[in-house]
Length: 182
Image 1 (cartoon, rainbow, N blue to C red):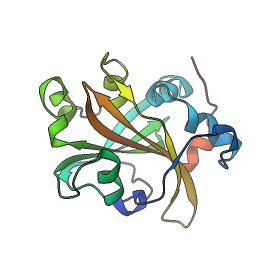
Image 2 (cartoon, helix red, strand yellow):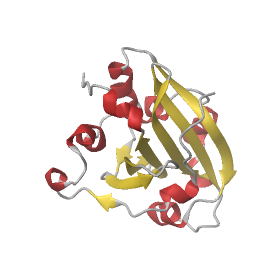
Image 3 (cartoon, rainbow, N blue to C red):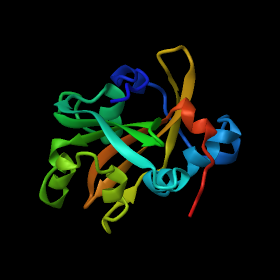
Image 4 (cartoon, rainbow, N blue to C red):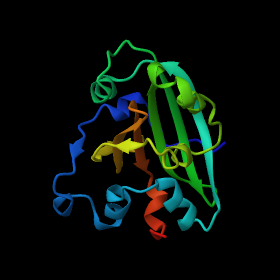
């Protein structure tokens, strides 16, 4: 297992900014296409890696959301949620660290399958679900354990009107990857 850049719940307790004017974002040009694309990040990473892509589960367990996550989901901070953290790897390099917060109330009916994704990507489920709706993207700078910062985005997804929050942190190795949209 490749150890992820130290990203814990506290790293996600940051200020997130709505993308009201994407052209004026202060994100460096190299990150803008990744940050602003509303399609499946999984599919873009598969394309960029010529299929040499995989999902590595770092952690999946029941817990409590951070204050910022609970606020985004409009749930109490003490509500139980499933926390799923994964690395998305291209050519065996960690390109993205993703943290998904799924309220227990979302894991009912057809959405029960979200509990058992294993190494399948969440995007492979979300973007195939005809009931899927997505909130506008928000971006933030996330501090890394080595003192650097990187860029992240998050958005709410709704499957059959049931919410889950997905945050994606673009790791430094992704800067070397050519963004390919197919």
